[in-house]
Image (tube, rainbow, N blue to C red; front, side, top):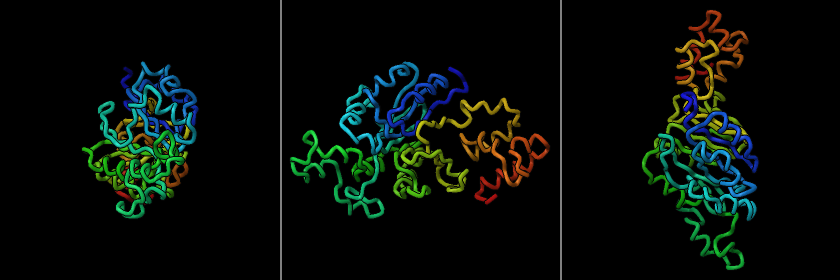
Length: 300
């Protein structure tokens, strides 16, 4: 395997467009991939991803749109890959313990701004028993709510052993439409990384100023059609761009997989130059000072 290949790649909501997933795997050859929900495969998922099943392990969580239609549901849960769902459990993948929480919060089930004891339905079975027979789908609860987060799902993860990474469809509280319950779950599991989809945005929460580097975990959102490679620097090729290794190491420590992007983005404190160019022109120490300030929660 290519030593620069990522161990894990996380893919934002495909919404039926899986060609970009296949192309990225064929190019980078990661050990495993995780789809972050709203997959909406147009054929059974194992058929859609057939070209890469011998190249990588495929894992997923579901999103709210994966219950939009019978086909969306069946092409995921009727697939030969259905057992690769991470929802409500912790699995070791590519050397990392990965916890998964698929679906979204719906107030009809549980509004996580309220105590969990006040949830209308503690479990899927409780909802099924409360439904009129004619409202059930396939003699179970309504299809739509098969992508709702129930307290039972959430509490099962809270009781799980520690994890390294949490993948969720919903975002953490730092997002304008995120949830404190995601932060609390991440902290209870002791994860160092949270990755989510749902909002169709590439977000490095530290770079965007939404979280400080001193936060208990790093968080990333992944846009539709985009991917996040892990560990930081894998598949990035930053070493070839002339950045001093000590500067690259510090940038990776602060920004993770977004280090290369930060080094190549013009900065107002560097006369509009990129940190990489400014460092190469004799300003290495100043760039390091900026990184250290960011790392310790300073505003620059």
